[in-house]
Image (cartoon, rainbow over all chains, first blue to last red; front, top):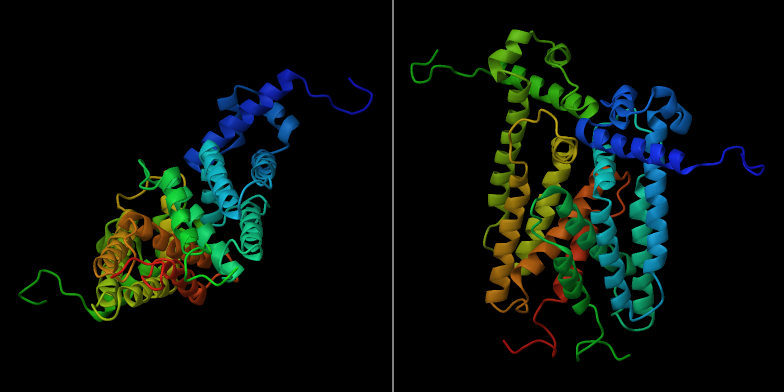
Length: 210
Length: 210
């Protein structure tokens, strides 16, 4: 054991942790969080109850780890997506499609978030699920503000354009969750946003002089 | 008993039925559909089990009655909202705000629909919850098509404009479900749609000649 930390994680530890998280996520999505027992999780992961308690302390601990790691992944990905390259329009499209890709890649955990957030109030672990949405709102709002300040977009109210863009992202992403096959996809999201921004861009005689 | 129908409903019947539906809805939203028992419903409504079975046959019967009556209310309201008066823009705004009002008025049953639709697959009664969404899509699509065919809107792809409008409706309505106080409201929905349609309307030199 290292002298620096009280506990050092081996690859075995990581494999067991990952297996518990993976099986718990499947059970939460199939049976619901409240209806899933610790016994079922350890049986599915092929470990003992003390092993689960050692790594996560409780069922709630597993849930919170799923949320925190997903939020960390999301934050890191968002940082990658908001590099200051291109026009505000290009950056908005890059951000929206990037978030769409993340949503699809992590659709199992997204499904759980939706079920907990919109489902009946269970003995739900204390986690601000809105953080995901709030971060999207902040990034889009910043890009809209920038597009308006540089004159790339017409001077419409920042909040209104932000929510219009978020609406398109939100609805197209939710469609991936609910409908197989989805009636709108990644390419449709780009078209919807193109349509919204076409009405906003300062081009053509109807726009105020830059 | 009337000679015309085998069963005539009295105001007493109606009151008992309504009470059962009302209490079941509260329980489904509080505990979840699967976790709610017939025993709890009849206790909350102050009736006996046979009374519930007489009117609805089962817990599933109550759920289906909630869905069917909500769908009937929605269809009737939609018919009222699509009267052919005004421009396509005016009719779209009337429809969107009218659906918003219905959503808020029936928010308890909407909450149940979301929980069942997005929650874990339970022994869920067989009902096509998408009917609500499909009806909205059909109406908006029809109004968009009309606006384009009369030259009121630019000739953008009907599906793209339809989904952009539906996105705004969907997201602003969901906000009422999740956030107290909601960050976007009925007035915001009108502004968002105004913004989308401003980019679509055939006004200004940038538009093709009508």
